[in-house]
Length: 152
Image (cartoon, rainbow, N blue to C red; front, side, top):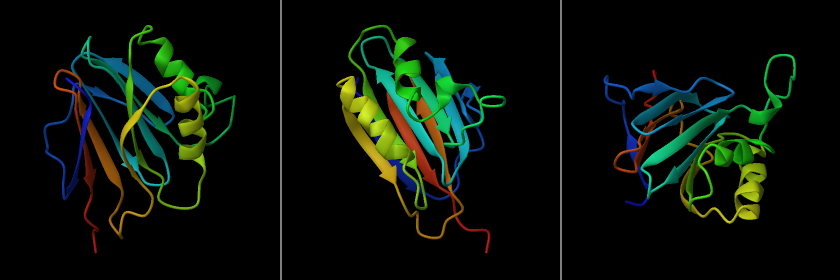
């Protein structure tokens, strides 16, 4: 099964994935992953369809080696994630980056250098909502980006 991205306007389900991905971190799973608080940050997902295994990262772009490992800097995250998925064919999805940032461009260059195709993206202004939440089912390859409604 290929990686399949879907965007949904509205609240995400109350049932979350098995593994939460914190800010400036990434996780690998064969079940499910999720992250929230995607505003100016970027969520990056890599998926190996043959193995039904994926990895999800939440990247802020902040550079502070004493707090944030260099492995999750925008210029390093794709290599970090790909190293956990062996040498199989991977696919990528990106979401987030509301505002003038360059995280996605840096990540896209890394994906291109490793010949990892981007099969979906939801980048840029998200129309006054309060950010995005990403849910990734590694068993089905379904990645859902929830555009959260404004509180006002």
